[in-house]
Image (spheres, rainbow, N blue to C red):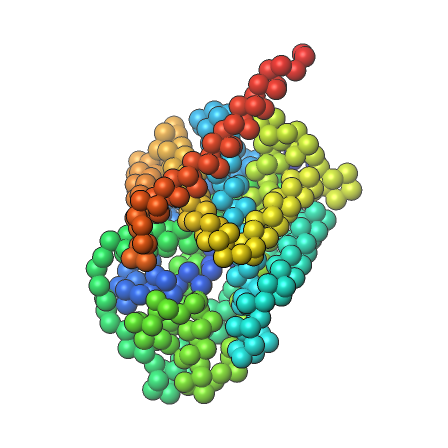
Length: 454
């Protein structure tokens, strides 16, 4: 069944648009401090995550994008390989996860931009909900409008974010080099400790490498996917893993490893090391480019994930209004507006109060599990696809095992969990609740389709 949007939506993404889109979706260097607590061994864990998750994902994306070209990406591939119901479940999980992730990026971007006003004011600004709300909702409105105007306009936010990600890595490395040359660099151990929490950190690393499949959700908007998708994945993959490895090394150089558990992100690590090395001026430009990179990532995930309800509306798995295309700008405007409203709602909930914020954090942990569910389908599809090489099938098996490990690791309680039973209950409810809601909506849409007169 053809989804049809290729007849109405223009192809605007070239090779370098794809490269920058993938980089800005994957490279979030604030993922580094929480997983760098194991010393230089963290570099080996990053390498293991790249080999066992990213490489199999790249093989699966290239294989399935060629076999099932079109709008929808992982939703389309699962639907073609496993049927309508499994396709919807996969797409629903991919979409709902991003309804949580985009607000996280918006709020985090606000915290980074606060450093641009000076470190003395940063803490005060981050604690002012009016400031956080103004920046978060303002950026959400900007990326929503830009993408409604069409991907030819919206892609420039992602492109700027991708370039800013490069500059962020460069500035972090510059701060580390300055600290080391001034003799104030930290001396991290090879390994600090071996615990079950290393498994959780490994899962976080795999989760940080998710994103090369995002462009394929806009498959009908890529100018030449057969020519450009492979090189874009290769370039983005190398840049992403090198960025994570270099930033991990820089953070271990800037801050003693025993302090990583209490430092809230890369900005604080760079601030501590840069001031010790008398290059504190680097903090403000780093805040600006990191904020732009995070804002570009929010735009990329917002634009890409909105294609899931768009295609689901075209196939009647969700209300058909979601499949409408703007008559002038040729964008899936109804799906984009719906995603913007929902992302705004979840952003507002995260700012309401401490009890709501705590519940929201539990949902975010559940979102990690929800995000990995589509990748089980992705790797199963690669394993069962006819005509693939034994090497590709083996990559699918490795990716499947790694994803299952990541799912299990998400349920392992960390040392700060006071009640394991309560933690597990909340996590299970956070996973089952959104999934069950999606299944209910799908079944209701199916019943409605059957009841419609021929």
